[in-house]
Image (cartoon, rainbow, N blue to C red; front, side, top):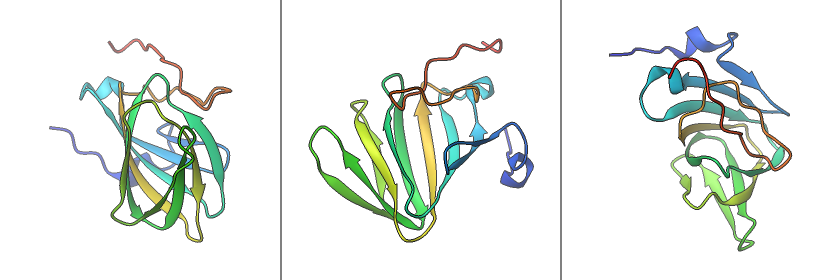
Length: 132
């Protein structure tokens, strides 16, 4: 059994900062769960174009508000506490912060190692680590 406390992640290499957002990597590939689990904090008004072409992602909003735009269809979906979206087709999308900071719980498959950064497409490259 693994017990992970968010307070033990903040300020460590498992807290990753990007352009305006921060992600707390609760479970990673080396934890051998078959997925990775993150808490992402998204600031009001911030937007980022992404395309997880190498990963599937499910995201559950637990606080705040914003929206996600499906770049294939142009549909915009509102995000707020209690809404989940799943990028089940490696969907190209834009995540936008609303009027309040969003707190998102994210699951990636395959799991990330914690070393990934967004590339020019907004994707994470597949990173192999030494813990396989």
